[in-house]
Image (cartoon, helix red, strand yellow):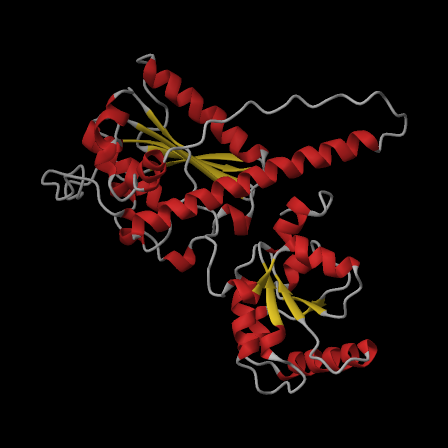
Length: 367
């Protein structure tokens, strides 16, 4: 069952990336068409046909973290002299570190968030490994990922260049500069700092004198967090409780009376919003904030009066990616303090505003 869920999640991720690519092509075409001095349109080269992944391949890739003996420990790492970790989550960092120690390979690790980054070389010439420095994973709720925290694009570029330099020096036998030390980069202040790391731990569970980790584990369970920086799509609602962005756009163009409820935090609404949306954060609905419920009730009364119909006014809930909107639907369905609300007339918009940007409005900001 877990393998099927992982395969489904991978297929969802592939579909999302294809939607993002299609959105970029539409935005490029719109930019070319809006030039002040029109030029003959430059046809975009067609995408090369991509062979579909077989079921076995999908299962192999999706189960690789849980069943790493399928390739990570043996054939995959042993085919290379040095490994570069460019991952974006804690679980993968522990996995790659342990695999490198077990395979006897040095690991050049770099990471970036917002304006900052860090880089070091683990398990080289008697130096410490990742577990020597971080024996226990941080609590999942304290970890900020790039999707939420953001990262300035040039910062990974700076760290990536130094990382590539370290890889080349190790491959050439010159030795790295950052084994046993860590480079800290502050892009906002323009500072490079170098700090010394602790030495290799004799009691390290993977590279110590008596290691207890002798094979790769379930690192998602070990870290209590997902091995991906992306938000996994929730499935809290039935298909009847959801509406696609294309169907919503159709009823919007038809002028059908309704309320669009945006449940994102204020900081995200300040970035972009649909002008006709009513904003009430999910947190206000979950704690049944009196002022927010009063605002919702007033909007429902006004909408019903303007529609001049006795039927319940539909409420469509939207967020960034379609997860919080499902939680909001559940919260609205349990409300008793808003008599104007018909729980059967509440639906969430599948995929949220990012699906709107990908399928409906290519100029809508994506963040």
